[in-house]
Image (cartoon, rainbow, N blue to C red; front, side):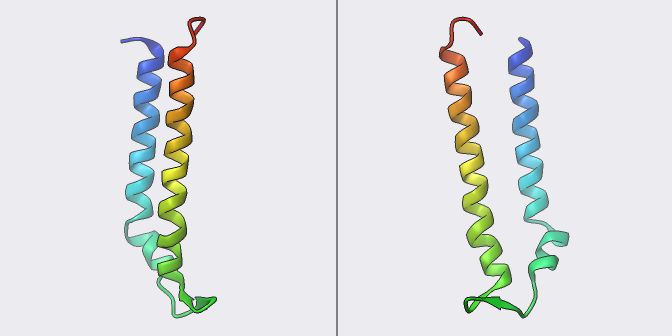
Length: 74
């Protein structure tokens, strides 16, 4: 297996485990408070910001992979 493929697999595993950690007990308990920001409960805001942010990070990672795959010098 080429080195870049192994490295990509490791990065995808990191993304996967970070996603699981972000949706598990300790983080959810941190944001499960009665406070609100602009009338939005903190836990809901965590989901509304955290989920799209994780999608954007994966999107930019995929774009970077696409540019590297098309580069004949890589």
